[in-house]
Length: 81
Image 1 (cartoon, one colour):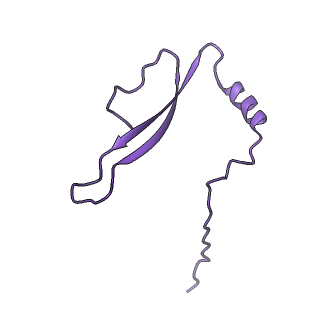
Image 2 (spheres, one colour; image 1 turned 180 degrees about the horizontal axis):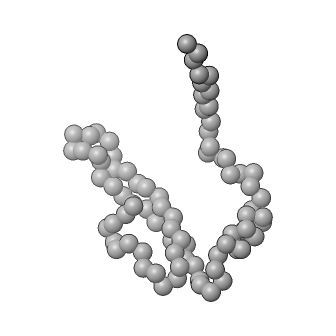
């Protein structure tokens, strides 16, 4: 029986985008966005309770970023993805 070759990869992607040329990325994004609209970038955080009452852990904070077309309403307060 022939066993398949397995490959394992471990990497840290914390700084994976540091080498992207910002000016070139901006030009690409400008070409993708529709110039007939204004866009809004919202940055916010969600504070979530611990997973269970028995948990000794503290509340969790999730940082979110969302881009929307100006005039479109985001989710109502208290809801999240």
